[in-house]
Amino acid sequence: MPDARHCRLALCALLCLALSARAADVLHLYIWNNYISASTVARFEAQCRCRLAQDYYSDNEEMLAKLAAGAAGYDLIVPTGNAVATLIRQGALRPLDKSRLPHLANLRPEYLDTEFDPGNRFSVPYAFSITLLGYNEEKMRELGVPVDTWAALFEPAYLKRLNGRVTVLDSQRELLAAALRYLGYPVNDTDERHWQEAKAVILRAKPYWAAFNASSYIKELTVGNIWLAHGYSNDMFQAAQDARKARRPFRIGYATPREGAVLALDSMVIHRSGKRPDLAHAFIDFMLDGRNSADLTNLIGSGNPNLAALPFIAEDIRRNAAVFPGARALGELAMLRDLDHRQRRVLSRIWTEIKVR
Image (cartoon, rainbow, N blue to C red; front, top):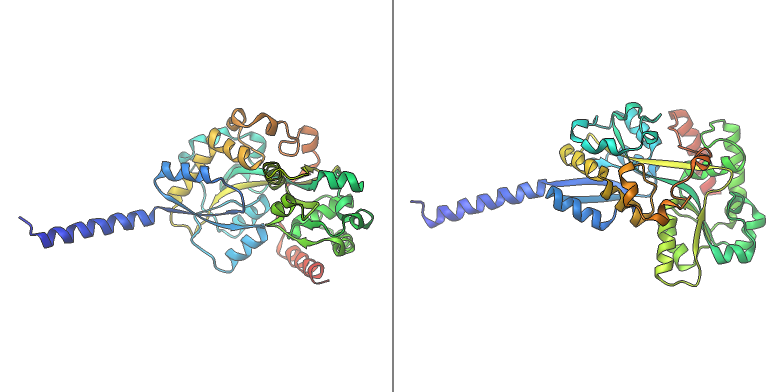
């Protein structure tokens, strides 16, 4: 019969093994700010009996730069299509094991087999957003500034009325795309002469902007510090909700400029440096469930590529054209494509010139 000392040692060993196993059951997720709800996280953790550890980024270029600098250990990342293409080209992603994704059939076919990942070998759509204008309805009406055109963001005649209460995304691709559309060019135009024209439009408007802001413009809109913001539809939805809940004396509206805009399809991808591809697959299939996917849209106003989610999405959100654009509006939207090394270098130089002048 074992003595008390041996029993204590055996118990200690078992506890250490249990704690070690529990510590290993962590899914490391690298995701956009404000892109998953606390209730969704809690449900997933309870279902998989694991912990979800999150790091956040506010721009695809920021995420790519961090990975290029050596950041590792992320199991799952949720980049936009052009960044997915970059990661595929770099060999940074694990191919999906679709036998582990029984809910894959829930996705709408128009969001599958994309140019950035034909056949969806590496990516599964998560949500989409439109890069548009969010605004203080009362101030825009009072000042006579139109809200359905990029002119509100780029024309000094309107910007003078806004008195420095404007922010733009701190994103070279997104801001250039807005300027290109305002000039009548496609968002994926790579003609350097057109990029220079877009730079000139941006520099002309820059003195009237308060900041380049990709992370806190929701709060700035909500409290009334900013009257016009260039940003993502799901963020504008949240700003509108927050202003209403706080009983602000104004409403936050948002609209897609008539010249056209960027549609960003964000997808779940499994990074090669992660240690838990099993948990990554479990999370992907969890988010493909209609109810879980709908929870994301109902809480943060993201567009939803999941057909099974539609019955569970609030009717007022389903009818919101800035969240779910109709067929005609979709024709005016385009996803950003990846750039080659030379184009990236040129754009980086242009962006530096924009930021320092």
